[in-house]
Amino acid sequence: MNLPADVQNIISILESNGHEAYAVGGCVRDCILGKVPHDWDITTSALPQQVKALFARTFDTGIEHGTVTVLLNGVGYEVTTYRVDGKYEDGRHPKEVTFTASLEEDLKRRDFTINAMAYNDSQGLVDLFGGKEDLDNGIIKAVGDPMERFTEDALRMLRALRFSAQLDFTIEENTVEAIRKLAPTLDRISAERIQVEIIKLITSDHPDRLLDVYETGLTKVFFPEFDQMITCEQNTKHHAYTVGMHTLKAMEAIAPEKVLRLTMMLHDIAKPVCKVTDENGHDHFKGHPTKGAEMAKEIMRRLKFDNDTINKVCNLVKNHDDRPEVNPRNVRRMIIRVGQENFMDLMAVKRADTSAQSSFERDEKYAYIDSLEAMYQQIMADNDCLRIKDLKINGKDLISMGVPQGQKIGEILNALLNEVVDSPELNERDYLVNRVKDMLQ
Ligand code: ATP
Ligand code: MG
Image (cartoon, rainbow, N blue to C red; front, side, top):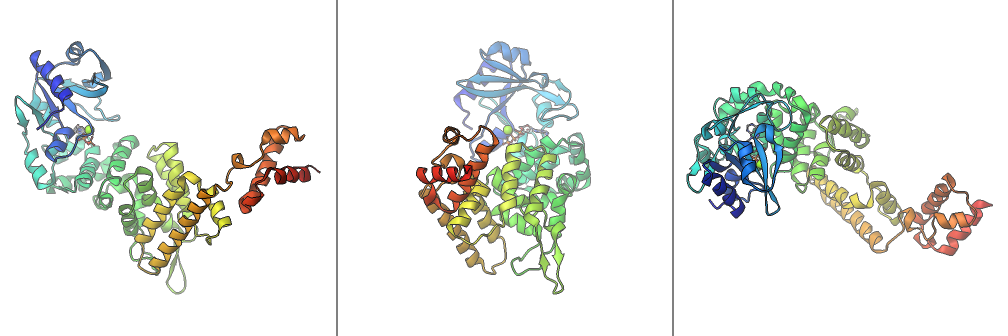
C-alpha cells in the first residue's frame, strides 16, 4: 500500500518517538479497493498531548475524544489516540471514551470489518476480523455481534446500508437480521447524523438501495412518507410502477448531486395523499407538486437540512410537472418563476422523471422538454430582459422624474418589467420614460 508522503511522515515521527501509528478505517478500505481516499485518518498509541508536542501545527478538533488534527502542507490529518468507546450520543463522537494502549481494542470498536483494518509500512496490513476477505467478497459485516454493536450505536444500521450503496456490497446475513430486529431503535439517533448517511446513500451509484432501507424497516423511523410511496399504486397510462418504485428509478436517472437526488426522492412525495381514483378506475394526483413542495420542506426541516438546500429542492419539486405551451412569453415567465440559475436543473429533473415513467408518449415527452430547453437557450442568447436590473431604466431615473422614494418605485419598475417580459423590444429608454410619464398622469 502506498501511503502519501505526509501520512508516512506523521507515522514515522510518532514511531521514532516510541509510539505506534497506523493509517486506519476508510482510507485503508479505499486503498485496497484501488480508490483514492478522500482523507487519511491515523490511529496511534500516543496520547493527544504527546501528539501535539511532536508537531508544529495542530488543532484540537475533538481532543476529548482523542482526536488532534495535524496540519502538514496545508492538509489536515486526523490523528486519534487508540480508544474504547462509551455510548454514542451526540454527532460523530461517543459521549465518553477511554484511551487504550491496544490497537486491537481500537479496531474492535469500529463498525464493519471492512472499516476495521490498519496499515503502516513496518507492520503491513493489520486485519483482525477478516476485513480484506469481506472486501474481496463484497460483504458488509459487523465487527463482533451485530445485535450488540447496533445496540451501542443504532446509526451503524443505516451506515451498513450506506456502505452497501456506495460499494455495491451485500450485507452479511446476521448483520441484516440484526438491522431488521433493531430498526425501530434508530429513533434514538439525531436527525443530523441520519442526514449525513442518507445523503451519502442517495448520492452514491446505487440510490435505489433506499429500497433496502425501506425493507429493513429503517425508513419507517425517519422517513415514513417513503413507505407510503412504495405501496401507492398508480393506475394511469403514464406509469408502470408504484410511486415509490418510480421514485427510485427517477433517482437513478439523474446525476449524483445532492439537490438533484433529493429532488427526485421527493418529487412525488404528495402523490399518496393527493390520489383520487375516478369512476373508470384511473388514478389522478392533482396538485401533487405544490403539496409535494410543502411536504418536502417539512421532511427536510425534520432532517435538519440547511435552508439553501431546502429552498432549491422545494422549488424544483413545485415546478417539476409544469408544462406550459412552448412560446417565448411562456418560457420567459417560466424562467422568472423557476429562477434562471435553476432552469437547467429543472430540465434534468423532467428528463429523469420521464425516463422513469411508462413508455406511453415517451418520445413526445422528451421532444417537449427539448423544445422547452431550446427556447430557454434562445432567450438566454438574446439576453432578453428578465429582471428589474435588466430594464433600461432604474430607480434613480424615476426619482429624477419626480417619483417619490419608496414603494412606488418598485411598483412602477415591476409594471414595466411585466410589459417588457412579454415584448422585449419595448426595453428601450425612450419608450420606458414615456410609459412612466403616462403612469404619473
Ligand atoms: P467515508 O469514506 O464516508 O469517510 P469512512 O469509513 O471514513 O467513510 P467515517 O464516518 O469517516 O467513515 O468514519 C471513519 C472510520 O471510523 C470508519 O471507517 C470506522 O472505522 C469508524 N467509525 C465511524 N463511525 C462509526 C460508528 N458509528 N461506529 C463505529 N465505528 C465508526
Ligand atoms: Mg472518513
